[in-house]
Each structure stands twice: as C-alpha cells, then as structure tokens.
Image 1: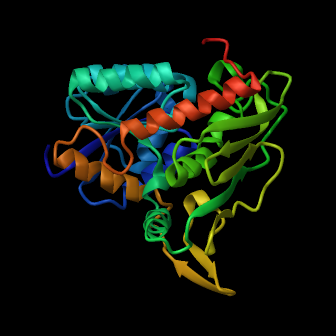
Image 2 (image 1 turned 90 degrees about the horizontal axis):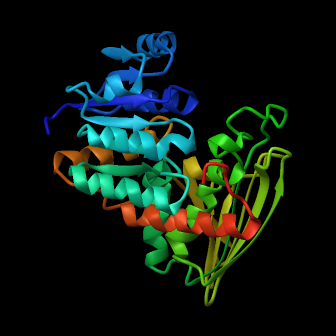
Length: 326
C-alpha cells in the first residue's frame, strides 16, 4: 500500500458529505473518486469535495484501478451487495453501519473479504471517538467500580409523512432500529458484552417500519436500558452507573466532545474534542491498518460487527420486525 491512499465514495448523501469533510483533514488521504447512479449528482459532489474523478455508476468506480478503498454510505439494504461487489474487484471497504441488514449478510461480507484478501470494516466511528476510547480504558481500570446499569438512547424527530423515504421504506430496511438503534446497542455491547437475554418492545408506522423501539439487556449483575426513535428528541446523554460512581457521556453522546465522572459527590469534566466532526479518527485507524496490510481493524473487528448485528437480529425477532426482501 502506498503512503497516499485513494478513497472512492459511493452513496453521496448527508453522511458522505460529512465524512468527506473529515477525510480532507486526514494526511495521506485523497478523495479520489465519487460515484452515484446520477451522473449530475456525482459531478456536483466531486466539485464540492475536490474529487479527481466522478462516475455515474458504482461499478465504474469499483473498476477504477487507482481506487484503494471504497467508503459505502448507501441505504442499509444495499450494504452487503455493494460491499461484496467492491471486494470482488479487489477494493478494501469501509461500510456504514449497520454493516448489513442481518447476520447472514454480514457473514457473506466477511467471507468475501477473506476470499479476496481485502480489508473490511464497519464504519462505527463512535468506537474511535476519543471520549469513548478513554471511557473504555477508565472503566477497565475500575474508576467507577463494576457497571450495574447503562442508560443510552438515540432519538431525533424525523419526517413520518414520507412513506417512500429512507426512514420509513421497508424495502430500504427503514426504521429507527437499524438507523439509530445500532448506537445504544453498540455501547451496551462495548462495555458489558453479550447479554443473557433481551426484552424489547416497539411501535410501528403504517409502512411496517419501527418508529420507537426500546430494549432491556439483562446481564448477571447489570442491566442496559436502550431506546431509539423517530418521534422526539432525547437529551442524548449516555449514563453509565457503577458500584463506585457514574460516567456521563456528553450530548450528543455518539459524537461526544467529552464526558464527566461523578464520584463521591464530585463531578469532574473531561474534554476530548474530536478532529472535525469525528469521522477522522476511524479514517486514521483505517488507513493505519491498510498501511500495515491488516485485513480487519483491531479496535473494531469483524467479530464485533457480527455480534452487534446478532443483537439487532434478536431485537427484531422480539418485536416481530422483518423486511420484505428477507
């Protein structure tokens, strides 16, 4: 792998715009090519972010010999298909969360990664957030004792009128659980692992997409109360309670700029600003792994992605959520 890494970007929506904003801040990274099914959209995006090339099809970008890695930010239902298509062309892949819609699809992506000997990673940028990295370390050191309770949510009001939009369209794997839900599930998994059992409940739109989903993860000596929804805005402060204190991850916790430790009646704030929006940290880690010829990320491995999608599958089973293409 050369010292300069050429990125290809597909799925040119809001997340890709934010990602490219941070990509421009990372040394040894080049926004080399972008692609959309609309050539006009591709041209506009390329001009905005200074991409060297733009394409009117994803396949054309996959076939570009100068593209080293493809960042995929398309709707959930296409993640597996497009990631595998890119890997079959010898491209490394960083794919937005959830890595795919279900466990079966994630397994097929991992198989394609191994068969083509390329790097694959779920773009779980929160895992690389400086606050999250430091909190994980401090909990391991016993700063708040043993965790007994986690409370985490991810809720923003969304347009509930557009039944064909990404949020509510079942054909696109729409709904709050796969859109926002991976974040609270991720936090519980990161800090407590796989629960003994899961209880979940949801409310649905007339399209069949979930618009509010709650889950309780039960562990031997702890519980995690998780919530995601499209109906209102929550305070977005994640709370981790231990036997000797509490950690609060500052709003908006999945892209936190700091956290607080509350212990012995005192609250101490720790400020950990991100580079740009926060995508830069996963980009830097991703590039470091590529330059060392690693095929998966040590901080967020494919096994982690497989376990989180398994937890999301269990929640879906509990609430009776199934997509028409499954």
